[in-house]
Image (cartoon, rainbow, N blue to C red; front, top):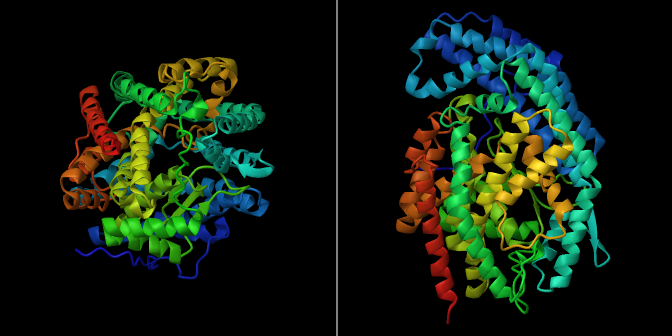
Length: 578
Protein backbone atom coordinates (compact mmCIF):
# COMPACT_ATOMS: atom_id res chain seq x y z
CA UNK A 1 0.00 0.00 0.00
CA UNK A 2 1.25 3.55 -0.64
CA UNK A 3 2.30 5.37 2.52
CA UNK A 4 1.07 8.88 3.20
CA UNK A 5 2.19 11.37 5.82
CA UNK A 6 -0.98 13.39 5.27
CA UNK A 7 -2.08 12.43 8.74
CA UNK A 8 -5.57 13.36 9.88
CA UNK A 9 -6.73 14.04 13.40
CA UNK A 10 -8.89 11.12 14.51
CA UNK A 11 -12.60 11.91 14.03
CA UNK A 12 -14.64 11.91 17.25
CA UNK A 13 -17.80 9.86 17.51
CA UNK A 14 -18.12 9.40 21.26
CA UNK A 15 -16.99 12.80 22.58
CA UNK A 16 -18.14 16.12 21.09
CA UNK A 17 -15.70 17.58 18.54
CA UNK A 18 -15.53 20.73 20.69
CA UNK A 19 -14.76 18.88 23.95
CA UNK A 20 -11.68 20.16 25.74
CA UNK A 21 -10.40 18.79 29.04
CA UNK A 22 -10.65 21.43 31.75
CA UNK A 23 -11.66 19.48 34.86
CA UNK A 24 -12.74 16.07 36.08
CA UNK A 25 -16.45 17.00 36.16
CA UNK A 26 -16.50 17.47 32.37
CA UNK A 27 -14.72 14.14 31.77
CA UNK A 28 -16.40 11.85 34.28
CA UNK A 29 -19.71 11.29 32.37
CA UNK A 30 -17.83 9.54 29.53
CA UNK A 31 -16.18 7.11 31.94
CA UNK A 32 -19.54 6.47 33.63
CA UNK A 33 -21.13 5.80 30.23
CA UNK A 34 -18.47 3.18 29.35
CA UNK A 35 -18.63 1.60 32.79
CA UNK A 36 -22.45 1.33 32.87
CA UNK A 37 -23.09 0.52 29.20
CA UNK A 38 -24.72 -2.83 28.50
CA UNK A 39 -22.72 -4.96 26.02
CA UNK A 40 -25.07 -7.46 24.36
CA UNK A 41 -23.05 -8.69 21.38
CA UNK A 42 -19.58 -8.91 19.84
CA UNK A 43 -20.41 -5.89 17.62
CA UNK A 44 -21.39 -3.87 20.72
CA UNK A 45 -18.16 -4.91 22.45
CA UNK A 46 -16.11 -3.75 19.45
CA UNK A 47 -17.95 -0.40 19.46
CA UNK A 48 -17.37 -0.09 23.21
CA UNK A 49 -13.65 -0.68 22.64
CA UNK A 50 -13.58 2.03 19.96
CA UNK A 51 -15.31 4.52 22.27
CA UNK A 52 -12.94 3.69 25.13
CA UNK A 53 -9.99 4.14 22.75
CA UNK A 54 -11.29 7.54 21.62
CA UNK A 55 -11.61 8.72 25.22
CA UNK A 56 -8.12 7.42 25.99
CA UNK A 57 -6.68 9.27 22.97
CA UNK A 58 -8.26 12.59 23.94
CA UNK A 59 -7.02 12.32 27.55
CA UNK A 60 -3.56 11.12 26.50
CA UNK A 61 -3.04 13.96 24.03
CA UNK A 62 -4.14 16.55 26.57
CA UNK A 63 -1.63 15.20 29.11
CA UNK A 64 1.13 15.10 26.49
CA UNK A 65 0.64 18.73 25.51
CA UNK A 66 0.83 19.79 29.15
CA UNK A 67 4.15 17.98 29.48
CA UNK A 68 5.52 19.26 26.15
CA UNK A 69 4.72 22.87 26.99
CA UNK A 70 6.27 22.58 30.43
CA UNK A 71 9.53 21.02 29.17
CA UNK A 72 9.79 23.71 26.48
CA UNK A 73 9.67 26.39 29.21
CA UNK A 74 10.45 25.10 32.72
CA UNK A 75 10.44 28.65 34.11
CA UNK A 76 6.77 29.26 33.27
CA UNK A 77 4.84 28.57 36.49
CA UNK A 78 1.46 28.51 34.70
CA UNK A 79 2.58 25.65 32.45
CA UNK A 80 3.99 23.76 35.43
CA UNK A 81 0.70 24.23 37.30
CA UNK A 82 -1.34 22.98 34.32
CA UNK A 83 0.76 19.80 34.22
CA UNK A 84 0.60 19.37 38.01
CA UNK A 85 -3.19 19.90 37.98
CA UNK A 86 -3.62 17.05 35.49
CA UNK A 87 -1.35 14.69 37.42
CA UNK A 88 -2.80 15.48 40.86
CA UNK A 89 -6.47 16.20 40.12
CA UNK A 90 -7.44 14.33 36.92
CA UNK A 91 -5.16 11.31 36.48
CA UNK A 92 -5.87 9.91 39.99
CA UNK A 93 -9.61 9.98 39.27
CA UNK A 94 -9.16 8.24 35.90
CA UNK A 95 -7.21 5.29 37.32
CA UNK A 96 -10.04 3.57 39.27
CA UNK A 97 -12.26 3.87 36.19
CA UNK A 98 -9.53 2.42 33.96
CA UNK A 99 -9.36 -0.57 36.30
CA UNK A 100 -13.14 -1.00 36.20
CA UNK A 101 -13.17 -0.82 32.40
CA UNK A 102 -10.31 -3.34 32.17
CA UNK A 103 -12.26 -5.75 34.39
CA UNK A 104 -15.46 -5.14 32.40
CA UNK A 105 -13.58 -6.12 29.22
CA UNK A 106 -11.99 -9.25 30.71
CA UNK A 107 -15.31 -10.37 32.27
CA UNK A 108 -17.38 -9.72 29.14
CA UNK A 109 -18.66 -13.03 27.64
CA UNK A 110 -17.93 -11.77 24.10
CA UNK A 111 -14.23 -11.07 24.74
CA UNK A 112 -13.37 -14.70 23.99
CA UNK A 113 -14.80 -14.15 20.46
CA UNK A 114 -12.39 -11.31 19.65
CA UNK A 115 -9.85 -12.17 16.95
CA UNK A 116 -6.85 -13.38 18.99
CA UNK A 117 -4.35 -12.66 16.21
CA UNK A 118 -5.40 -9.02 16.55
CA UNK A 119 -6.13 -8.74 20.27
CA UNK A 120 -3.66 -11.11 21.98
CA UNK A 121 -1.05 -8.55 23.08
CA UNK A 122 -3.72 -5.94 23.85
CA UNK A 123 -5.63 -8.30 26.18
CA UNK A 124 -2.36 -9.49 27.73
CA UNK A 125 -1.61 -5.86 28.67
CA UNK A 126 -5.12 -5.34 30.04
CA UNK A 127 -4.76 -8.40 32.30
CA UNK A 128 -1.34 -7.21 33.43
CA UNK A 129 -2.80 -3.78 34.34
CA UNK A 130 -5.56 -5.45 36.38
CA UNK A 131 -2.98 -7.53 38.27
CA UNK A 132 -0.88 -4.46 39.10
CA UNK A 133 -3.63 -1.99 40.01
CA UNK A 134 -3.89 -1.00 43.68
CA UNK A 135 -6.09 1.88 44.88
CA UNK A 136 -3.48 2.67 47.57
CA UNK A 137 -0.90 3.49 44.86
CA UNK A 138 -2.98 6.18 43.13
CA UNK A 139 -1.86 9.15 45.30
CA UNK A 140 1.74 7.90 45.36
CA UNK A 141 1.83 7.66 41.55
CA UNK A 142 0.34 11.15 41.28
CA UNK A 143 3.13 12.52 43.48
CA UNK A 144 5.75 10.57 41.51
CA UNK A 145 4.50 12.01 38.20
CA UNK A 146 4.96 15.54 39.50
CA UNK A 147 8.24 14.93 41.38
CA UNK A 148 9.89 13.30 38.35
CA UNK A 149 9.52 16.52 36.39
CA UNK A 150 11.61 18.38 38.97
CA UNK A 151 14.71 16.90 37.37
CA UNK A 152 14.01 18.95 34.23
CA UNK A 153 13.30 22.07 36.28
CA UNK A 154 16.60 21.77 38.18
CA UNK A 155 18.64 20.87 35.08
CA UNK A 156 16.98 23.50 32.88
CA UNK A 157 18.48 26.25 35.06
CA UNK A 158 22.07 25.00 34.67
CA UNK A 159 24.28 27.33 32.65
CA UNK A 160 28.00 28.15 32.48
CA UNK A 161 29.94 31.14 31.22
CA UNK A 162 32.54 30.65 28.49
CA UNK A 163 34.43 33.62 27.01
CA UNK A 164 32.04 36.01 28.74
CA UNK A 165 28.93 34.39 27.26
CA UNK A 166 26.26 32.29 29.00
CA UNK A 167 25.60 28.78 27.64
CA UNK A 168 23.31 25.93 28.63
CA UNK A 169 25.29 22.79 29.44
CA UNK A 170 24.18 21.31 26.11
CA UNK A 171 25.49 24.35 24.23
CA UNK A 172 28.74 24.40 26.24
CA UNK A 173 29.44 20.76 25.33
CA UNK A 174 30.57 21.87 21.85
CA UNK A 175 33.71 23.35 23.46
CA UNK A 176 34.71 19.79 24.38
CA UNK A 177 35.43 19.35 20.65
CA UNK A 178 37.73 22.41 20.53
CA UNK A 179 41.21 21.72 19.10
CA UNK A 180 42.68 23.75 22.01
CA UNK A 181 43.17 21.29 24.88
CA UNK A 182 43.24 24.06 27.52
CA UNK A 183 39.79 25.27 26.37
CA UNK A 184 38.41 21.72 26.54
CA UNK A 185 39.75 21.17 30.04
CA UNK A 186 38.46 24.51 31.31
CA UNK A 187 34.92 23.90 29.95
CA UNK A 188 34.89 20.28 31.19
CA UNK A 189 35.55 21.54 34.73
CA UNK A 190 32.98 24.34 34.39
CA UNK A 191 30.23 21.93 33.29
CA UNK A 192 31.01 19.43 36.04
CA UNK A 193 31.39 22.05 38.78
CA UNK A 194 28.01 23.49 37.74
CA UNK A 195 26.44 20.02 38.05
CA UNK A 196 27.97 19.61 41.52
CA UNK A 197 26.19 22.77 42.72
CA UNK A 198 22.91 20.84 42.57
CA UNK A 199 24.27 17.44 43.67
CA UNK A 200 22.54 17.62 47.07
CA UNK A 201 19.17 18.65 45.65
CA UNK A 202 19.36 15.95 42.93
CA UNK A 203 20.43 13.35 45.48
CA UNK A 204 17.51 14.21 47.76
CA UNK A 205 15.07 14.17 44.83
CA UNK A 206 16.30 10.72 43.79
CA UNK A 207 16.09 9.38 47.37
CA UNK A 208 12.46 10.57 47.61
CA UNK A 209 11.58 8.99 44.26
CA UNK A 210 13.27 5.74 45.30
CA UNK A 211 11.36 5.58 48.58
CA UNK A 212 7.98 6.15 46.90
CA UNK A 213 8.72 3.66 44.11
CA UNK A 214 9.68 1.02 46.66
CA UNK A 215 6.40 1.62 48.50
CA UNK A 216 4.44 1.18 45.24
CA UNK A 217 6.18 -2.19 44.76
CA UNK A 218 5.48 -3.36 48.32
CA UNK A 219 1.83 -2.29 48.01
CA UNK A 220 1.53 -4.43 44.87
CA UNK A 221 3.03 -7.53 46.51
CA UNK A 222 6.55 -7.35 45.04
CA UNK A 223 9.79 -7.60 47.02
CA UNK A 224 11.36 -4.67 45.20
CA UNK A 225 10.61 -2.00 42.63
CA UNK A 226 12.76 -3.67 39.97
CA UNK A 227 10.51 -6.74 39.88
CA UNK A 228 7.37 -4.55 39.91
CA UNK A 229 8.72 -2.34 37.13
CA UNK A 230 9.61 -5.29 34.89
CA UNK A 231 5.97 -6.38 35.17
CA UNK A 232 4.65 -2.84 34.67
CA UNK A 233 6.79 -2.33 31.55
CA UNK A 234 5.37 -5.55 30.13
CA UNK A 235 8.73 -7.30 29.85
CA UNK A 236 7.11 -10.60 28.96
CA UNK A 237 9.96 -11.77 26.74
CA UNK A 238 13.08 -11.37 28.88
CA UNK A 239 14.03 -11.34 32.56
CA UNK A 240 16.58 -9.74 34.87
CA UNK A 241 18.96 -12.64 34.19
CA UNK A 242 19.05 -11.64 30.52
CA UNK A 243 20.07 -8.13 31.59
CA UNK A 244 22.90 -9.56 33.71
CA UNK A 245 24.00 -11.64 30.71
CA UNK A 246 24.00 -8.45 28.61
CA UNK A 247 26.23 -6.68 31.18
CA UNK A 248 28.75 -9.54 31.02
CA UNK A 249 28.65 -9.65 27.21
CA UNK A 250 29.49 -5.92 27.12
CA UNK A 251 32.53 -6.55 29.32
CA UNK A 252 33.68 -9.49 27.21
CA UNK A 253 32.96 -8.36 23.67
CA UNK A 254 32.52 -4.59 23.66
CA UNK A 255 35.08 -3.23 26.13
CA UNK A 256 38.08 -4.51 24.08
CA UNK A 257 36.76 -2.54 21.06
CA UNK A 258 36.16 0.54 23.23
CA UNK A 259 39.76 0.34 24.44
CA UNK A 260 40.99 0.12 20.84
CA UNK A 261 38.94 3.20 19.90
CA UNK A 262 40.46 5.23 22.75
CA UNK A 263 44.01 3.99 22.06
CA UNK A 264 43.58 5.16 18.47
CA UNK A 265 42.18 8.50 19.68
CA UNK A 266 45.18 8.99 21.99
CA UNK A 267 47.59 8.24 19.15
CA UNK A 268 45.71 10.52 16.73
CA UNK A 269 45.87 13.42 19.21
CA UNK A 270 49.53 12.72 19.96
CA UNK A 271 48.91 12.50 23.72
CA UNK A 272 50.76 10.59 26.43
CA UNK A 273 47.57 10.39 28.52
CA UNK A 274 43.96 10.58 27.32
CA UNK A 275 41.77 12.62 29.66
CA UNK A 276 37.93 12.75 29.61
CA UNK A 277 38.02 16.18 27.94
CA UNK A 278 39.96 14.68 25.02
CA UNK A 279 37.56 11.97 23.86
CA UNK A 280 35.47 14.28 21.63
CA UNK A 281 38.45 16.26 20.27
CA UNK A 282 40.18 16.34 16.91
CA UNK A 283 43.93 16.86 16.34
CA UNK A 284 45.18 20.43 16.24
CA UNK A 285 44.44 22.12 12.91
CA UNK A 286 41.26 20.09 12.30
CA UNK A 287 38.10 22.02 13.04
CA UNK A 288 35.21 20.31 14.88
CA UNK A 289 32.33 19.15 12.70
CA UNK A 290 29.58 21.76 12.49
CA UNK A 291 26.86 20.17 10.33
CA UNK A 292 24.34 23.03 10.74
CA UNK A 293 23.92 26.42 12.43
CA UNK A 294 20.22 26.77 13.27
CA UNK A 295 17.23 24.58 14.06
CA UNK A 296 15.73 25.59 10.70
CA UNK A 297 18.82 24.37 8.87
CA UNK A 298 18.85 21.12 10.87
CA UNK A 299 15.21 20.52 9.89
CA UNK A 300 15.79 21.28 6.20
CA UNK A 301 18.88 19.06 5.96
CA UNK A 302 17.23 16.17 7.82
CA UNK A 303 14.24 16.36 5.46
CA UNK A 304 16.61 16.24 2.48
CA UNK A 305 18.48 13.27 4.00
CA UNK A 306 15.23 11.39 4.76
CA UNK A 307 13.95 12.10 1.25
CA UNK A 308 16.90 10.20 -0.21
CA UNK A 309 16.13 7.20 2.03
CA UNK A 310 12.38 7.14 1.34
CA UNK A 311 10.24 10.19 0.40
CA UNK A 312 7.60 9.14 2.96
CA UNK A 313 10.13 9.68 5.78
CA UNK A 314 10.73 13.26 4.63
CA UNK A 315 6.99 13.88 4.31
CA UNK A 316 6.53 12.93 7.99
CA UNK A 317 8.99 15.64 9.09
CA UNK A 318 7.48 18.19 6.68
CA UNK A 319 4.05 17.54 8.17
CA UNK A 320 5.40 18.00 11.73
CA UNK A 321 7.12 21.24 10.72
CA UNK A 322 3.90 22.52 9.12
CA UNK A 323 1.98 21.70 12.34
CA UNK A 324 4.57 23.41 14.60
CA UNK A 325 5.54 20.09 16.18
CA UNK A 326 9.31 20.75 16.35
CA UNK A 327 11.27 22.53 19.12
CA UNK A 328 14.91 21.82 18.39
CA UNK A 329 17.32 24.48 19.71
CA UNK A 330 18.82 24.60 23.20
CA UNK A 331 18.00 27.64 25.36
CA UNK A 332 17.97 28.59 29.01
CA UNK A 333 14.89 27.37 30.89
CA UNK A 334 14.33 24.46 28.54
CA UNK A 335 14.43 20.97 30.05
CA UNK A 336 17.45 18.86 29.03
CA UNK A 337 17.44 15.90 26.65
CA UNK A 338 15.43 15.05 23.59
CA UNK A 339 12.24 13.08 22.93
CA UNK A 340 9.57 12.27 20.38
CA UNK A 341 6.14 12.50 22.00
CA UNK A 342 3.37 10.57 20.18
CA UNK A 343 0.09 12.49 20.10
CA UNK A 344 -2.70 9.93 20.10
CA UNK A 345 -5.42 12.06 18.51
CA UNK A 346 -3.46 14.37 16.17
CA UNK A 347 -1.29 11.49 14.96
CA UNK A 348 1.73 13.64 14.11
CA UNK A 349 4.06 13.54 17.12
CA UNK A 350 6.20 16.31 18.64
CA UNK A 351 10.03 16.36 18.57
CA UNK A 352 11.81 18.14 21.43
CA UNK A 353 15.60 18.45 21.63
CA UNK A 354 18.49 20.74 22.59
CA UNK A 355 20.50 21.32 19.41
CA UNK A 356 23.74 23.30 19.58
CA UNK A 357 25.21 22.69 16.11
CA UNK A 358 27.06 19.44 16.72
CA UNK A 359 27.15 16.00 15.08
CA UNK A 360 25.45 14.68 18.23
CA UNK A 361 22.46 16.84 17.34
CA UNK A 362 22.22 15.32 13.87
CA UNK A 363 22.22 11.88 15.51
CA UNK A 364 19.52 13.01 17.97
CA UNK A 365 17.39 14.50 15.17
CA UNK A 366 17.47 11.40 12.97
CA UNK A 367 16.95 9.25 16.10
CA UNK A 368 13.82 11.19 17.10
CA UNK A 369 12.83 11.26 13.43
CA UNK A 370 12.84 7.43 13.49
CA UNK A 371 10.49 7.53 16.48
CA UNK A 372 8.28 10.00 14.61
CA UNK A 373 8.03 7.72 11.56
CA UNK A 374 6.99 4.91 13.93
CA UNK A 375 4.17 7.15 15.24
CA UNK A 376 3.02 7.91 11.67
CA UNK A 377 3.11 4.25 10.63
CA UNK A 378 1.12 3.06 13.65
CA UNK A 379 -1.45 5.91 13.60
CA UNK A 380 -3.93 4.09 11.35
CA UNK A 381 -4.30 1.17 13.78
CA UNK A 382 -7.85 0.86 15.03
CA UNK A 383 -7.38 1.19 18.81
CA UNK A 384 -5.11 3.36 20.88
CA UNK A 385 -4.01 0.21 22.74
CA UNK A 386 -2.79 -1.31 19.46
CA UNK A 387 -0.32 1.58 19.15
CA UNK A 388 1.30 0.92 22.53
CA UNK A 389 4.36 -0.82 21.13
CA UNK A 390 7.15 -2.19 23.33
CA UNK A 391 9.87 0.35 24.05
CA UNK A 392 12.52 -2.03 22.70
CA UNK A 393 11.02 -1.94 19.17
CA UNK A 394 10.46 1.81 19.53
CA UNK A 395 14.20 2.23 20.01
CA UNK A 396 14.94 -0.05 17.04
CA UNK A 397 12.89 2.47 15.00
CA UNK A 398 15.08 5.36 16.14
CA UNK A 399 18.52 3.73 16.32
CA UNK A 400 18.18 2.08 12.91
CA UNK A 401 17.46 5.50 11.45
CA UNK A 402 20.77 6.78 12.84
CA UNK A 403 22.56 4.08 10.82
CA UNK A 404 20.38 4.15 7.67
CA UNK A 405 20.67 7.93 7.40
CA UNK A 406 24.51 7.82 7.39
CA UNK A 407 24.42 6.78 3.73
CA UNK A 408 23.07 10.28 2.93
CA UNK A 409 24.92 12.46 5.43
CA UNK A 410 26.57 14.28 2.52
CA UNK A 411 23.67 16.76 2.92
CA UNK A 412 25.24 17.82 6.26
CA UNK A 413 28.90 17.86 5.17
CA UNK A 414 30.55 19.63 2.27
CA UNK A 415 33.73 17.59 2.03
CA UNK A 416 34.33 13.85 1.71
CA UNK A 417 36.87 14.14 4.54
CA UNK A 418 34.25 15.62 6.92
CA UNK A 419 31.68 13.01 5.89
CA UNK A 420 34.11 10.17 6.63
CA UNK A 421 34.97 11.72 10.01
CA UNK A 422 31.27 12.02 10.86
CA UNK A 423 30.60 8.37 9.99
CA UNK A 424 33.66 7.29 11.95
CA UNK A 425 32.46 9.23 15.02
CA UNK A 426 28.97 7.77 14.69
CA UNK A 427 30.28 4.20 14.54
CA UNK A 428 32.51 4.88 17.52
CA UNK A 429 29.39 5.93 19.44
CA UNK A 430 27.49 2.83 18.32
CA UNK A 431 30.15 0.88 20.23
CA UNK A 432 30.97 3.25 23.12
CA UNK A 433 27.31 3.64 24.13
CA UNK A 434 27.12 -0.03 25.21
CA UNK A 435 29.27 0.35 28.36
CA UNK A 436 27.17 3.35 29.47
CA UNK A 437 23.93 1.40 28.89
CA UNK A 438 25.33 -1.49 30.96
CA UNK A 439 26.46 0.93 33.70
CA UNK A 440 23.09 2.68 34.03
CA UNK A 441 21.15 -0.59 33.88
CA UNK A 442 23.34 -2.45 36.39
CA UNK A 443 23.21 0.57 38.74
CA UNK A 444 19.39 0.55 38.68
CA UNK A 445 19.27 -3.15 39.55
CA UNK A 446 21.47 -2.49 42.60
CA UNK A 447 19.63 0.68 43.67
CA UNK A 448 16.20 -0.97 43.75
CA UNK A 449 17.41 -4.29 45.17
CA UNK A 450 18.88 -2.30 48.10
CA UNK A 451 16.23 0.39 48.73
CA UNK A 452 17.46 1.19 52.27
CA UNK A 453 20.92 2.30 51.09
CA UNK A 454 22.40 5.65 52.13
CA UNK A 455 23.53 8.31 49.62
CA UNK A 456 27.13 7.42 50.54
CA UNK A 457 26.54 3.73 49.78
CA UNK A 458 24.87 4.72 46.51
CA UNK A 459 27.89 6.80 45.48
CA UNK A 460 30.28 3.98 46.43
CA UNK A 461 28.31 1.36 44.49
CA UNK A 462 28.00 3.66 41.49
CA UNK A 463 31.79 4.01 41.42
CA UNK A 464 32.26 0.21 41.54
CA UNK A 465 29.88 -0.28 38.59
CA UNK A 466 31.22 2.74 36.68
CA UNK A 467 34.78 1.46 36.97
CA UNK A 468 33.71 -1.96 35.68
CA UNK A 469 32.67 -0.33 32.41
CA UNK A 470 35.27 2.47 32.19
CA UNK A 471 38.16 2.17 29.78
CA UNK A 472 41.60 1.98 31.44
CA UNK A 473 42.89 4.00 28.46
CA UNK A 474 41.24 7.16 29.87
CA UNK A 475 42.96 8.78 32.83
CA UNK A 476 40.31 9.90 35.35
CA UNK A 477 42.73 10.76 38.18
CA UNK A 478 41.70 13.75 40.29
CA UNK A 479 38.12 13.70 38.95
CA UNK A 480 36.60 11.39 41.56
CA UNK A 481 33.93 13.80 42.80
CA UNK A 482 32.65 14.54 39.28
CA UNK A 483 32.51 10.81 38.58
CA UNK A 484 30.84 9.99 41.87
CA UNK A 485 27.82 12.07 40.88
CA UNK A 486 27.93 11.26 37.14
CA UNK A 487 24.71 9.25 37.40
CA UNK A 488 22.81 12.45 38.19
CA UNK A 489 23.02 13.62 34.59
CA UNK A 490 20.98 10.63 33.35
CA UNK A 491 17.39 11.82 32.97
CA UNK A 492 16.01 8.25 32.74
CA UNK A 493 16.97 7.46 36.35
CA UNK A 494 14.65 10.22 37.52
CA UNK A 495 11.86 10.25 34.96
CA UNK A 496 11.58 6.75 33.44
CA UNK A 497 13.16 4.19 35.78
CA UNK A 498 14.49 0.99 34.21
CA UNK A 499 14.09 2.43 30.73
CA UNK A 500 17.67 2.00 29.50
CA UNK A 501 18.43 -1.64 28.69
CA UNK A 502 16.05 -1.02 25.75
CA UNK A 503 18.77 1.06 24.08
CA UNK A 504 21.13 -1.91 24.25
CA UNK A 505 18.61 -4.41 22.89
CA UNK A 506 17.56 -1.92 20.21
CA UNK A 507 21.13 -1.09 19.21
CA UNK A 508 21.62 -4.79 18.47
CA UNK A 509 18.45 -4.70 16.36
CA UNK A 510 19.59 -1.52 14.61
CA UNK A 511 22.98 -3.04 13.73
CA UNK A 512 21.13 -6.10 12.38
CA UNK A 513 18.94 -3.89 10.17
CA UNK A 514 22.00 -1.95 9.04
CA UNK A 515 23.63 -5.26 8.03
CA UNK A 516 20.52 -5.87 5.89
CA UNK A 517 20.75 -2.31 4.52
CA UNK A 518 24.36 -2.80 3.40
CA UNK A 519 23.22 -5.84 1.37
CA UNK A 520 19.97 -4.38 0.03
CA UNK A 521 18.71 -0.93 1.15
CA UNK A 522 15.16 -1.41 -0.16
CA UNK A 523 14.67 -4.78 1.55
CA UNK A 524 15.98 -3.38 4.86
CA UNK A 525 13.71 -0.32 4.77
CA UNK A 526 10.71 -2.44 3.76
CA UNK A 527 11.37 -4.80 6.70
CA UNK A 528 11.77 -1.78 9.00
CA UNK A 529 8.42 -0.30 7.93
CA UNK A 530 6.68 -3.70 8.01
CA UNK A 531 7.65 -4.14 11.67
CA UNK A 532 6.79 -0.58 12.72
CA UNK A 533 3.32 -0.49 11.17
CA UNK A 534 2.34 -3.46 13.39
CA UNK A 535 2.43 -1.12 16.40
CA UNK A 536 2.09 -3.25 19.52
CA UNK A 537 -0.13 -5.93 17.96
CA UNK A 538 2.57 -8.60 18.06
CA UNK A 539 4.94 -9.81 20.77
CA UNK A 540 8.45 -8.36 20.91
CA UNK A 541 10.13 -11.45 19.33
CA UNK A 542 7.46 -11.38 16.58
CA UNK A 543 8.13 -7.68 15.90
CA UNK A 544 11.87 -8.39 15.62
CA UNK A 545 11.09 -11.28 13.28
CA UNK A 546 8.89 -9.02 11.10
CA UNK A 547 11.95 -6.77 10.72
CA UNK A 548 14.05 -9.80 9.71
CA UNK A 549 15.92 -9.71 13.03
CA UNK A 550 16.86 -12.18 15.75
CA UNK A 551 15.60 -11.37 19.24
CA UNK A 552 18.84 -12.35 20.87
CA UNK A 553 21.27 -10.65 23.22
CA UNK A 554 23.51 -13.58 23.99
CA UNK A 555 27.29 -12.99 24.17
CA UNK A 556 27.84 -14.91 20.89
CA UNK A 557 25.33 -12.75 18.96
CA UNK A 558 26.67 -9.52 20.47
CA UNK A 559 30.21 -10.57 19.54
CA UNK A 560 29.14 -11.19 15.93
CA UNK A 561 27.44 -7.78 15.59
CA UNK A 562 30.39 -5.97 17.20
CA UNK A 563 32.71 -7.59 14.67
CA UNK A 564 30.50 -6.31 11.85
CA UNK A 565 30.66 -2.72 13.19
CA UNK A 566 34.43 -3.05 13.70
CA UNK A 567 34.87 -4.18 10.07
CA UNK A 568 32.80 -1.20 8.89
CA UNK A 569 34.98 1.14 10.95
CA UNK A 570 38.16 -0.42 9.60
CA UNK A 571 36.97 0.01 6.02
CA UNK A 572 36.20 3.69 6.75
CA UNK A 573 39.71 4.19 8.15
CA UNK A 574 41.17 2.56 5.03
CA UNK A 575 39.40 5.11 2.81
CA UNK A 576 41.16 7.87 4.78
CA UNK A 577 44.65 6.46 4.13
CA UNK A 578 46.07 8.21 1.03
